Image 1 (cartoon, rainbow, N blue to C red):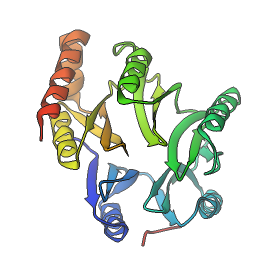
Image 2: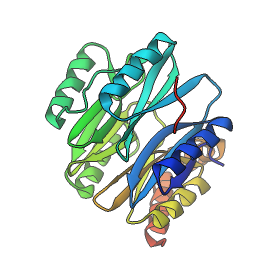
Image 3: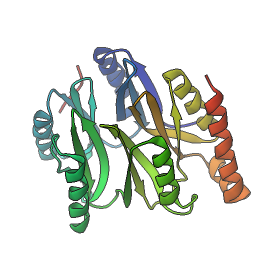
Length: 271
């Protein structure tokens, strides 16, 4: 059984209530996406101190980031849903994440910033798109060792195969869609990740259940051009035993089986 859970809300008010209810149960919002007149949220079970805020503009979010920092929290992820910026925070430490981008950054400028921050020892942690602008969040230690930008799902899949080297290289850990582009985030730490695409929320929920049966959990989601994309990571000892006992080829065949089954399936708290 996966540790992460997800929610589907019809509006921001309902989503805010869901966030608060999950918060009380120990689940922290880690990703949110708008699509098909719904808000999709992904939550992770955590024990360490954390927090979140909602702001009406990115400038207000940046002020919230500064306030959170002064209270011992660093930004972990930024999400934009239905005109509202959400900031997800975690307890600050020596590897804390720092937001550098502005919301009006073009994709070309974002990639330039990524390279510049990499040269200064900061790695890409999260990317978010809103109203023609891209936001990047960077960390001192954990973060991306690669990224890909694709104009289509076919190109995205080709890039993923190149980045992961058929499961022996980098892993897909995050995805975002904006202005006709699919943005994939990769890192070198093996997590045996995978992804699925669906044309509706019903189909997407079926895919999530199929992946969970193999010990994978949903960690990131994106929506664009009528398509839902989910990123999954292996989390259970059963899945790891399956991977190492059957080998890479058999494991890849199992993943193809999941995709085949999936294809046939039909006011927030603040600091």
